[in-house]
Length: 134
Image 1 (cartoon, rainbow, N blue to C red):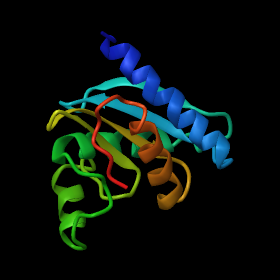
Image 2: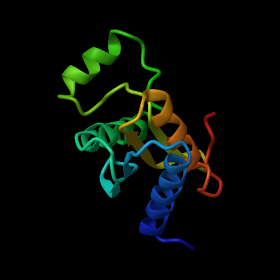
Image 3: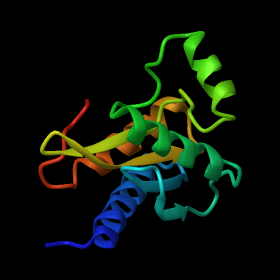
């Protein structure tokens, strides 16, 4: 049985592989089901301030159990303001759901929303039994 750290590192490695494949350096955050940071990676050339957005995307995905980017317009702004930026609607956050239970999430930042989403979706696929959203 893999440890939590090993699972988080597996997500980071898969995200780096996908980001390298599409030639987009990324910031990658992995959180547990409570939104607590487990692992972080910043690829060479990734925008340094994307640490914050990658973490908030991961936290949001873990909280709602849904990929980020789908909250209704207007509600997303109110949510971001009400939570002082802790919940955001930018694409690139994907929950890790195994056996119907959110066990964590990954957030990707530094590319376009579509690139970030693509990297996050690819990473989650390496977790055995995880729900796929694409």
